[in-house]
Image (cartoon, rainbow over all chains, first blue to last red; front, side, top):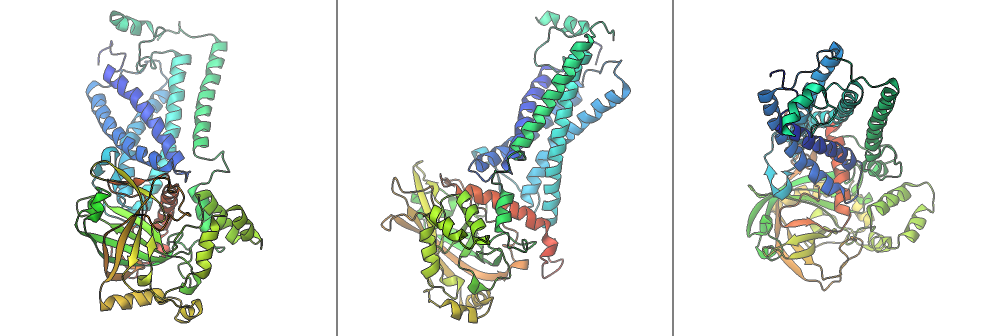
Length: 194
Length: 352
């Protein structure tokens, strides 16, 4: 992780934005499907299961990439509480991206539902039916979903704060394409690619 | 980091406003999707509220068809169903079956003679294949055409307004067929003498990819013996569970599964409309019930007979009810498992 490491690797950036779309879709589908009895309930819940497993796989790949490539260091002048908030929220996001699909899958297993994905792929049951575990996992899935969405909003607010107000290169480090008004050092780094 | 890129104060204020708008807009869109801004949306929770008796729901129990008894046995497919659906359960063979005889009431302590509708939940699960769940009732047609009308029916039947049902029947003319059955159909004194009907339509896909809209029924081998409602009441509040537990001692109970195939143009989206009598029917196999077990410790307790759990070769049709039932059953299951302590198992510690 040298000083020139101002951006996440292209694969990390791609996964970030792909998963951003998946996660937002997932959270909206989740909160929408449990509030309707309309025919759309069935496709929504079906997408929720398949997309959940896709997110689990992508999140594990992303975790491996993060461990391998690391992350660009935060600006040295970023106040300590903000730095801490940034680091903790990233840990929380990884825990949720991996934990929520596993909780959902186990929750369905403990309710004795078959877990069938797109294409008729049936996942194995992770645990036998259990009233106690099912209601525990249901509570976890439900309340963590709201915490997850709150964290996503916080993440978006922080990203915009970095992009629009601090203009410190943090947003540029994950931006899908190089941005013109990145800090000098960043422009220097990406210049040869242009 | 030098501050040479620091924007002017006005831009900063504008940026904060922009961030607030984006975050606030996101939260509002989320709240809208969750239905918090749409009091008129018919949610599973509202349906359950309408199903609950005046004193509130029976905690730990299914929110409807709350009184029931478990059974286990096998489904013996004769192979004829394979012409309609490639589902494994229609391939000639024997598949484990688990189910529940039940009464269409939200009160698990209702006296049997006070309940008009009887039902059967059934799960047929090939050992390595994908399972099929269905929940059927003995009425020949469903009371209403849409889930929303069903909600209105529940509200009307619980209403203090003496004319509520009359008004409901006037604005939902399809209700007449069910009401006529409810009024005049004879009762029997046994779950074994009932015919259980899917009423909802599903789409079967055969090996060649051809689709067939279908409904199914379980037709009892036992000859129905009519009994007046008064005589049924005299046999006791739990006569049906007692009777079926006794009857099983003299041998297994059987039902023939009959699939009815729609002609083009038959109403698949409306379970309140029967299809004409001359439609093609296929006997696809026999349900053989070997054992009856009380629900508190029985194997059916933990099963949600969600009619949208279908194996490859079957899928839902344009009938809106299976989706509505699935969403409401799911919430009922989530609630009752959380309340399991209110419906104690007889043998404490018998299950992990």
